[in-house]
Image (tube, rainbow, N blue to C red; front, side, top):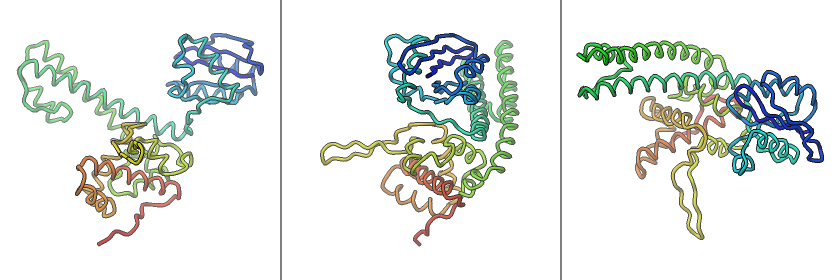
Length: 332
């Protein structure tokens, strides 16, 4: 049997197909009841998409079914269908499972999943805090107060509270400032947990041996790339993160353009920031020499992005070999 499960927040559409391609059952169940269905079809192959709530459902189903988590970005037969309904999607998943044509999606270990939840949770809080800071700035701009103030700093909030605004606007600004302070406390608490987590894991300890790589940077990179042995080479990892240059060839011409920007933009940002610290603050000799050679013939932005890629390659080999940072010798 082949079980296609189209997941939603609280319920799922299920299609069960036999080995001849016939649908033997279609049903709509609550997610909490999926284990009962899995027990009925124990041993069958099942397919679900990598939705926001797939992880715990996949773990539950895997007790009874052979579950494949499909990458929704690669499910062209579903996403490009003229008729897109829950029933159609469930049947398509079952059909692809029967044909062994599902584009697998990486399912992280529980430890990686927890680390992702931490770093992504912090990032979400920071984005929300920035939204409230922008609201404050918008109110000030509307009242002609265009001087440089910083709602994200304590001194900046104090100076904003001293401004003479009409009552309603004062209340709106105060509400946003209070929310910023609450979010800052939550972010600080998460950062403490992140630091403890990073200090306890062998993978992040290795990555933190690189100058310029903090607890947060190390945990973010390790959490987002997952287990290193799922990459066959450093080139695969670089491509996964999106730091690989886009190459176009035509005849005898070969053009290397900007990076592909696949994968997580936050990880690329973290790597670029770490490269900046390694080069401009820690002055790591290996990365600094590499950056200086490129910066002499490229823009500083191109040079630092290439250095971030170099940094990621070093991380790959450190994690793959279980070795601390020990770059090759540099020229005098």
